[in-house]
Length: 356
Image (cartoon, rainbow, N blue to C red):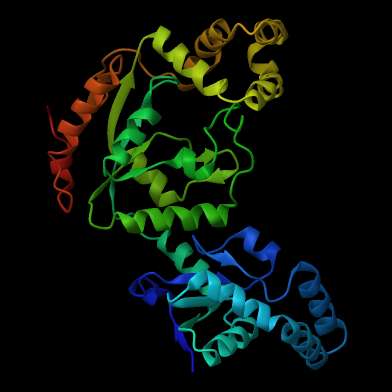
């Protein structure tokens, strides 16, 4: 007989394969990070069974559901077997009900090591919501600075070296500001963002601090959980600054990475008409048409980004550490020196404010 497993027990099951048996629409709204969607009922079938349940009878709905599921079970078994191999399988539906129970029973009978998530995705979602209502357990070190100063590049290098970095822009698939979505496509749902963020935080549970880039409370359509955002405001603040020339170069590289990105820039520009004025927008559009990306980026920095964010472009006593990022290698050395003074599992946040 298959076993039920609670949300709290999930980390104990190493190398488990998560199978979300809900419909494609339910899966798209949010799931457990890394889960594979193998619906017992697809969108249309779920809607049909739901209509029968409410308008005719629950018994008839279950009978129809049984007929639909029985035809699929052999194929679903093969599909899950191929994905999971010898790894344990964790099945879940919305509330840990009939969908996951019926499939778990079949997989168990076929000899696969299968578990059913007690309470289903609903229980997992409640666990995430509760987590982000508590006091945030990490001290956050925030890289601040104007657009184009290379904050994201520094953080990605540090993350690759094993430092506890939370890439909020990557996780939200948005850079913030009017141009935040250019070239990036659709953002995750709020539910999925929070699940992904929790998963990342759990991987750093042996650290007392995290590194991240300063972001607004909202990143596109995503909102940062209150405890996380508040910890950013209270955390260690590091200023990154650089020359206008270097910042312009970085912005050109970022916004001309793909042809589709260049095509999306005029659409975003029109949203700034009220802020910058019609004449300025027309001049910027003309620079784009001429493919004068350097002048376009420079004007955007001076007339939009810098007034919007307003960070100093020089050392300032308002910050715990200031780094001139003309040489990323030198900047990384300074950051490593600063961070390596912090004991990874230290409970004393005062140790984090190191003077170097």
